[in-house]
Length: 263
Image 1 (cartoon, rainbow, N blue to C red):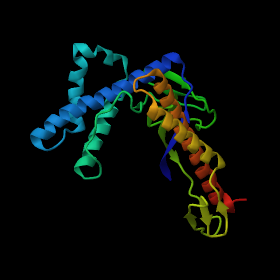
Image 2 (image 1 turned 60 degrees about the vertical axis):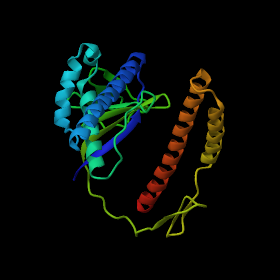
Image 3 (image 1 turned 30 degrees about the horizontal axis):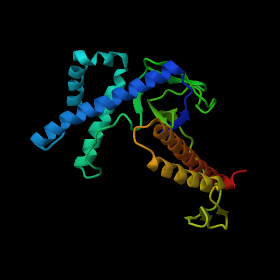
Image 4 (image 1 turned 45 degrees about the vertical axis):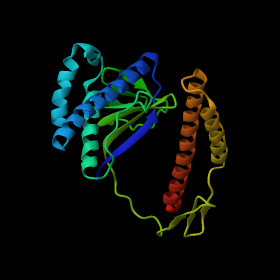
C-alpha cells in the first residue's frame, strides 16, 4: 500500500543559509500579504475571491516592478506556495470552515515551502533550491533513497526545522493482540482497559511553573526594549521545551501500546 508520510527534523544551517532562510520566509510573507490586498479589493467588488491561477499571473507583474528586484534572489516556489496557501484559506473561509485570512507580521512565525524535482534528501542532509545542501542535526532519521514531494522550512525559538512529505510503500500490519481501550484523565495521563496506567512527565510541571514566571516578567517589561526581546526568546524556548516534553510522552505511550503484543 502506498502512503504519504511526513518527516520532521532539525536542521544545522550555517550563517549564510540562515540568512537565506530568513529571506525566503520574508518572501513568502510578502507574497501572502500582496495576495491578500488584491483579494480584499476583489472581494469587496464581487463578493468572491481570486483563484490561485489568477494570483499567480499577478505575481509575475509584482516581481517585475523595479522595487522588487530582490525577488530574483529567492526561489519562486516560496512565492507560489504562499499564494496556494492563501487560496486554500479563502476556500475555507467561503465554506465556513475558517475565519477571514489575516495579514502576516514580520514578528510572526517564519516559514516557507518549496517543492519540485530539485529536492533531494539523504540520511545526513537535505537539498533545497537556491540554497543547496543543508545538514541535519539528527543523522539516520531520514530513510535512504527518499524523494521529497515538498519541504517546509520553519523557525521556532531560534532553531530551524525541515518537514517534508514522501510517498512510501507500507506493508499492511497484522493485529498482535486483543483490542485495548484507553481513557485520558486528569490525575493520570492515560489508563488502559488492561489495567496499565501512565502518569504525566515529571519535567512538565517544572517547565510550566518557569513559563508562568517568565511570562509575568515579560508583562512588566517595556515594549521595544532589548531586554524584552531577550525575554520573548526565552518564552519561545520554554514553549518549545514544553511541546517536546509532551510530544515525547505521547510517543512513548503510543509506542508501548502498539508494541505491547510484539515479541
